[in-house]
Image 1 (tube, rainbow, N blue to C red):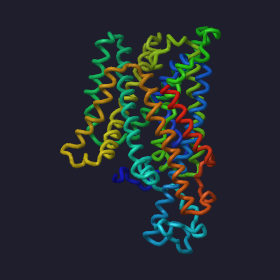
Image 2 (tube, rainbow, N blue to C red):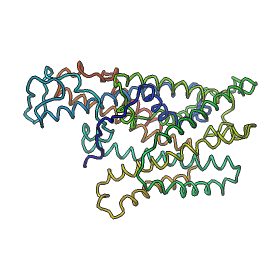
Image 3 (cartoon, one colour):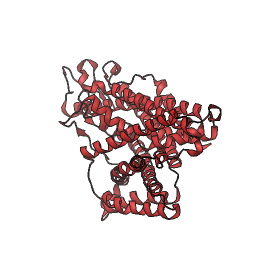
Image 4 (tube, helix red, strand yellow):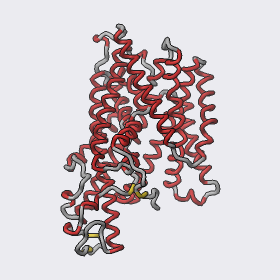
Length: 451
């Protein structure tokens, strides 16, 4: 299979650790967070605490694997250049020895730390092809496409449901009308090639965070007025509902396929781990506050699967409309981008697409129509989030990073002796037991979801 992604050199534009933290935060705080309050209210507070802490921690562990592998990919590209040019980037004073198999065997006394500097962007698909071979990259692109299909279906259902509730129209007519109206209006943009602008990112960030903070404040004020669920009526644990919850939590903390794009423009790569750690802590606290104030404020039967719709009847009309419609603005701006990404990955997964007449238009329809069909028959956002996170999300968040770090370390062991001493981005969870724990955790989530 041909290379499916192109490694891009570090752009002259860079940003600080604070800006990187903001971008990563925006990636993490999405529609998945809005589905958590209803799911945790049904699964129970204890289940909610366990799922949020366990999944967020294991997600952080696997992100550190991704950072390490990204650095290793840069080093491997550097050692490959040794074979072609006879030197390694950095201070080289000796010759590189080649093994009988033609593999590069680099002497540790000729390498300098810059070998592992993160300067080129390698997407997860490229790294899978580099370290896992054709089978590994095919597996990754397959699960990524399934994940993006799930994403698009979630967005379509969320927008149609939001517009239906905001207009208080009949479900049988309005849901389908809004769904097809959304597809007709946004669909044409999916046939183009474009990137999100800075202003669009800023608009989305402001809308999302304003809505989240406003929902938390309104809920806290309502609790202060005496509107809360008696403690003896709160659900503590429901084993069956917990299975769905864990899939939703995986979806919420999934950003791994975007890590390379966030890290590359970071001016000081030494801050990468701190940026990720701070973001995961903030998002965990942020999500927990919103979720548990919602659970305390209203019983599970009164919490909408899309939490923002709980405020559609707020006495202040402007607030009610803003919170009810905010998913429409943010999700609509992202929908074409995800569809274009899916189309490009489908074309990469099926190389014969380049030989087809009107291949881009055909694969745009292949990317666009299945999620719309799913949205016609499945109206439950929570169910879609759970399914997407439980299967494709698991593969991207845990399985692929675990296999990548396992095989990349094995390759370094064979080519760069004592590489651990010179790797500035090696995961703090560097013992192999953490890798196997990550893979076992993925298997556990999958088994509990199936059975």
